[in-house]
Figure 1 (cartoon, rainbow, N blue to C red):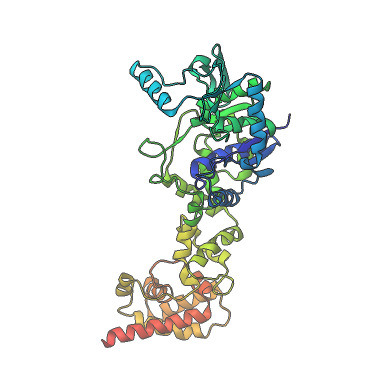
Figure 2 (figure 1 turned 30 degrees about the vertical axis):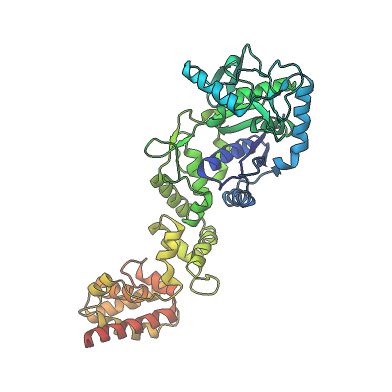
Length: 471
């Protein structure tokens, strides 16, 4: 039997980090076993579902590279099929109409709580006879077995047993006729041939109910695997304040998609002591049974570390493709101005944890800066600096072959001529051409900035220092 998994988000918000991890685990399992990965949009909650959320989910999946073999399949396009199954369950006596009012149900639950019981439907309409009450739009309830138990052989958690007497007769159709989650997910998983359902453990209590519906339809359930939740550093369920933001926010903050995937796969799964994985390694080594049963803790510092590891290992051209978006956010078009984005990425990646940081720190390669760093200028634009910059300007203006090695020799020659140590020449030069006292080696910095910009910035620095001395 061919493996088939699915990711089935509700389009009521963005694709968050927990949903992305569930999607990744399902995707990895399908890819490892040569199976299919299906994207299903569970949009039957008409009031809360939005097209903007659907687009946000699709955008997040696309950025992460979690390609799907089928979909997106929308539940709202399958309403006729759900109605057909509900009618079948009613006809076969496996479901029934419930006319209980909200007031009666609320009072019933209060009485149960007062007796120390778990609130659950008492089955009043289960065996109801006679004509229906006038003016009441009933719900449809599934007639859950009242004896025996449901044994879930969970691929992550092991054997989990539920007593049927603890499961009440859940609603499978609302009073307006729309189906509920536990009915639609069963029908979809059945019709789409899902062999494995991998989802968050907040769905574990739904699983015995869904298995009972499947068995009422004469079908065998898929294999379930419930992955634990992700916690914040404070031990509470991950929320936005911990980092549970949209997946695309990680894109905006300068993370590589492969680094985010690497971090997500390590949230609850491991392969020996290995920390850094590329996508092929994830597919090769991933085992659903190796997912931890305990909750995982989100750690932003670990994500930043992994991102830098992937930046260091990536081909410069790959980095440049992702870096270009961040340069564009700064108003820089790397195709029209400055050096190769790949060269800049390769040069600065050791000094940056994110692409956003890299773009901001390397903006001077592409465009002129507005002002010098105040502390850097005060420290390095004094003493013999003006004379050194004037000599550098004269020597560099004569250079035609603008290569790092040649430029480095020029700087050394000026040091020797003026009998100055390298920092006394290189640091004022660095501030002059970058605006700060931090950059890669001065020869490579000059090469990447280019001849025209270097000379213009040197002239500007010389004028600035003269104006300061004159004041």
